[in-house]
Length: 478
Image (cartoon, rainbow, N blue to C red; front, side, top):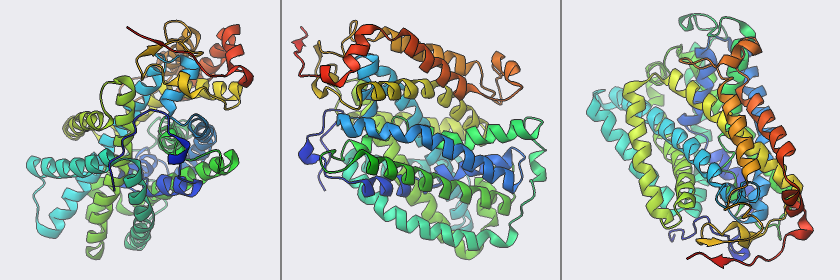
């Protein structure tokens, strides 16, 4: 299969040969991995019982999917990735906000997937062949996972789609086996090792779980969905089918692995750590399937994230090819794996990462969706590519390539959201006003969206009307 040559340029209609079923396959197959499974461990580690954990994960995922899924339609209409498409709201240079947010999201999730997958692989190999849990063992396993991930990400979308189709079937079978493997020790009681409710009260802890374990899953895709839907042609498929496929793919692709993680956390008594107890509680006959799940699943998920990171860096540095950008971010992601392994606990690192990135990314997504509704899904494809072609002009040029109202709205929303998060090592000053409950993502989205609507100038409102979107004259920059 040839290496993909496309970066963040517009995909010609003749190359847009995927269909909504492919979207379900890639969202399901790529998420059946330990990097997503481990989020199901967070509610038990916060001190919640089984039913409270399940309801928080399901509620958060449903709310997050309802908010995130419509973003799939943006690239479906614009034929380029989401961060580039957001140039219609932020300006052709201002869309770098989306590229940076997407880069950070994908970087964190790639590192997390390799980190957790590698830890389970080392533990499983220790039981199977006596591999010591030394720094060298972790380094070699992390390196092998990173190398396999890079191979899939560099070859691009078609290879990742083929891999996801296989993983959707193979990983489902491995997880079903896992249910039987861990069922004998399953309990619905809260794990005493967790030390009670993390935030002191039930509802505060339940809401933290709904955000950190449930909502964070769909939010991770706010800049990723367009990487896949840009290959689906609106000439052959309807927006309704694409939206339904996104809903189904996100719900199945997130709830199945996360609830498996919750189930195995109680069965393994994994209150303070997930990888070690998961391996220790596994019966001998499940060690090989567990090793396959840790390796293959991690490569599939991290490969998809790394592919997205390559696109985002390519969007930030247009002179850099997608392949070179992918190699660069792979090195950074691998470095983050070692930092996470040696310098932080899994619970603190995961909770801090998802809550902060959710607060920062939500206002960007809200502004992009408002813009999509305003223009009714009609974009000037040539005008969106101005920055990538090192040119000037077009209806999305605004002021020097930046739409100041949109950028200010995002920055204000992100700032307010950051002041309203409650992390293991930091509590924002606004948390006292919300009863100790983390409302960062809600406040960031509301502030960013309302500010954008209030500041949106008449010129932008005119440009958002579909009848004004036409061919664009570009001036070559010297």
